[in-house]
Length: 316
Image 1 (cartoon, rainbow, N blue to C red):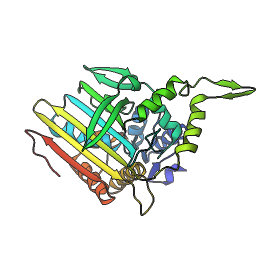
Image 2 (tube, helix red, strand yellow):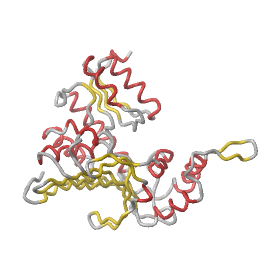
Image 3 (cartoon, one colour):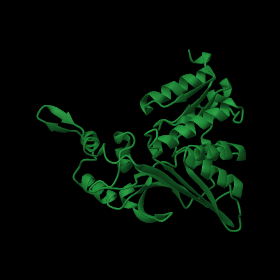
Image 4 (cartoon, one colour):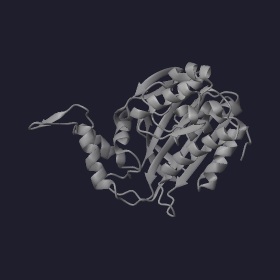
């Protein structure tokens, strides 16, 4: 059935996404996926090349546009010594005790706090505990905190010569203290507890409670990113902010994911992207792809800036 299509956009839950991408690979068609797969999507690369298929995985906001910005700068600078991607969807006006808002899957959100984050330190890939990595941040005047998260993903293998690499998730002050207390009380555990004859998974129960208590807070949010790429002689700092779209009632993060996937599909349709195989966005970071993507996000309300660390003077 898929062979009758030229292009598909996959926004399925990750458990269903991988079989769909396998089918697209066998059918030899182009696919753009925003799903956060647990499987190693690069295992599809050989078959995709053989069948003339193109799979663009992790094609959302972050990973996705974050990787495109970082990949563009690594290529533009001729290499990099350090890549740090700081990002987060945060409420405009945080309220205690949660100091956060729920703009996407709560179950997947909770996984950010329990999943060891892969980073590269001193040229070696290692893992870090999110709660052991909290640090202070100031992003365009906003005083925040960050912790390492498992979003570097394909960038670790796409650019193996970058010795320092990590993704950090941004949060308002107070949120990580709240989540640390939740963790210490055992609510981030996947081990079942029994209430009479019913087995309950604490982290799943927590997700439902948080959704009930905090799912209807002020909808005004913003999705912000600061992507820093350093090299021997200078570097780039990208700044991005997609605010809540009140006219269409669309969260900033949701808007960012949609624009990234849609514009990638449009560039495939237009013949700007012609590659085959499995190609995360950081491997498609040409001048044309990067510029079109940045312009598309601006058209939908985002601030997209590139600031140069001397001696480079690149602006767009």
